Length: 454
Image (cartoon, rainbow, N blue to C red; front, side, top):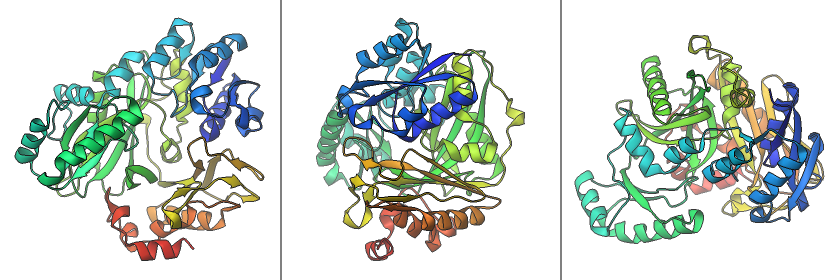
């Protein structure tokens, strides 16, 4: 096992990693930007280094400073968390060249799955079902031809994409070329790569993802699924495990497909294979693979009892998985709500400022992963995620009732948060009846949603 791990991230995921390391007896070294000097991850770590000013490009994305700090501190490994450098294959290679173990997949696996068009081809050749689609678009004529053959609606997706950037739904041929230009420009701005491809769009699909773990000894397992269908502009708001829509045969088939895809990519570490589920006939199709720990990993931990971050670290240290596939069991139901510093009544505008009074919920079956405290200053430089509330129940209804109570109890005076909006979703009759899909939030009428956030 490692003696010292460098945590190359901030916020709640840095805290999560540090806690897992402490339980394994590993010394932790944090990095921080100048305004994050007093942050919780800095306080909890055994040692911490400032790697630059507020701007992420000069601090949390500053590879020379992060590598230098790791070497000076005597770290043997680097955990990137999610976001920032977590899916940067060049960073993983640089870690290798400095004899620092990157706690994640190999650069080759990251490259294979990070290019969405390439990943589609790999999955298709491996027998994993994919939606009708194209490779990287060579011309507008190819786009028009695909739209005519596949039928609308279709989806434009950035090849190097993620987080909904460079993604557009096109409902009719007349809107295709304009949407292509917009998607390319957004992809170029977000990823420095304007390549896009097209897929057939499923209007009322569910977004289901399978959590996988693979060690360096050829062992690979999955830990069931998460339903991530509640999204706004392709950004997940709420996740559940297990999905209330999958029957055992579909769950087994999707899990087997995820393992097949991960093996094809030569994958090791924790990862997530994402699918779209067509609710009309329960057919499913590969969407993408996230080559990192996911924001929503706690819901899987709550229903399986498996510490995914601990397993990531063990895998990177060369140890075998601590359980077999037949030892994975799902118990009860878990729901996670992402609490962002945003104002739902003002178009989800970022909400910055000081939290003058904070109360985090608790009680049986309630878990809060967060880095904030009384007096915490919400900064404009980074992601607006303040933390996650995760609730477990013996049934879906019990988990949702517990979540509603927990969100009502949550206080973060001085800023706006998405907690009231999430309560609106949880108490929506269609959501309670499990009648949801990836466009569910967009289909909610504005008046009731905004009224409930006041």
